[in-house]
Image 1 (tube, rainbow, N blue to C red):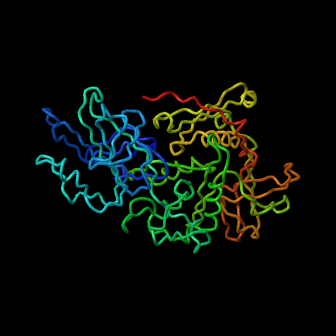
Image 2: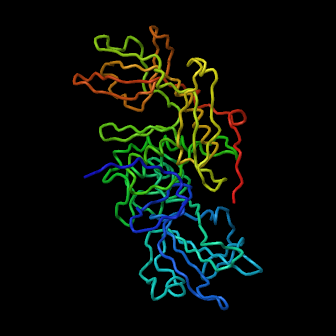
Image 3: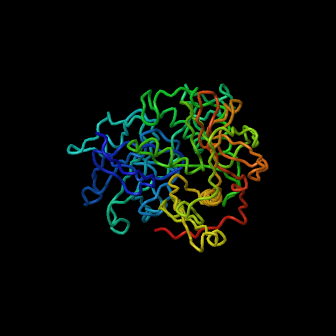
Length: 465
């Protein structure tokens, strides 16, 4: 019954969708979309030209969004005039001899009545637009063009850059340990810089995305207790930390994209985690997230703490098939019309020499990261972390029962030559006698060091249009 589903991609939807089977979708963070066709019609006259106007109604998000940031028409960014008409804001680039020929009107999803221009001027007997077509909760655009042989060679194509849904940010809720006026029970208080942070986006997906009291996407019936707020706030603040970027200081991790409800929830979560070097741990029904570099260790062990009566395993290095010594990545590039762009690849001749002169590349799709600086930071830290091959499976006594997946421990080992060496806990198995068996992988905080002046390679942006 389930059938076989293709692996979804969350790349920019650059062409308008049409038909009766287009899945609902919603926008998180900053991204672009061509949307889906809701209605279109030709109408009116200009001089002796009948049907001189063409109007297209395009649904952009099935959740309300914060704002429309930018519009692209036929592959080029355009400027909207300051004074709207009943058809919308005129597009200045399509003003000819002092007369406008293209208009854009935008609704953010909070509208309560149908657009009077559509129900009055555009609707026809063959293609009516009823007053009941409000589009509750749906952000949409109305695009109207007047025929002009020098300006249009066909119906214009549009791309809309949106700042997506307002989300609940627990770090901005004073009642749960944050600092702010947001409240989970009052969506009118939601929204802020956290809307762009991957940890906030994942928190909302795990609690469930709803509109008007109805579930739309994400997990269902997950209470707040299953997402320990202190742990989540700590990771949200890590995303929010300022770091040098191409245009000045910016948050360390931001993500944005369009999620169709047909995409499996786990795949959407993975796509967002990829954008913040994140890991999500499920611990007996409790969800915790970790982003970026290692945190302060929750425990310290020595060789004497390890139970010698239990089996131990140690993997000192990767096999050739699992070795990575170079990385390339693709990401949606706002400077090139939000098309997919390849970031400058990272090569390491020294690592290639260790692999017998082989270049062993990894290719990563960063569909949720439209920020060139963050893309390169992710590439560098991923390549360095891919060199951390030391993995252990060891047994510890009951006093380490509180160690959980996603935690970090410091290990001083005379046998292995470790001095407070950091390890990430990848898995924990509880034993009936309260001993625990843990899988750990070495980590190094220096993998996440970033010197923008040295590490950043300014990309070349191809001209648009």
